[in-house]
Image (cartoon, rainbow, N blue to C red; front, side):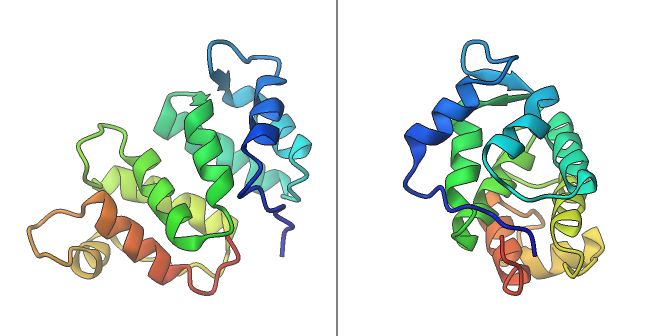
Length: 156
């Protein structure tokens, strides 16, 4: 299993590392800096995992990562419920508060590369499991709860 340092109480250190990236401007970096960022944070990841993270951020954030989103993700890595919610929030590209089939695919692609034991699932099955209020949509909160349930074996 990959080593993931605990940054829960190290916001200042995360911000320092983030701001030291070559493309840092006005609170943002490009995904080109992601491999270096992961290295600076002492995260042990495979090249395949790093590339998957870059592709995820490219798809969900348009190739740029803002400091607040990054810090929220990094500080939640050791608390599955928070991490699951952050994934759902960042995947919600249209910011409508719900997870579409494309956004679901982004989430599951990242989770599967992060943990190859993460169960593959269709969007229809996701809807049936995650739509707990049965309104025909999966909210950020419902998606976060579903991810957390599925990640119970994952050392996020």
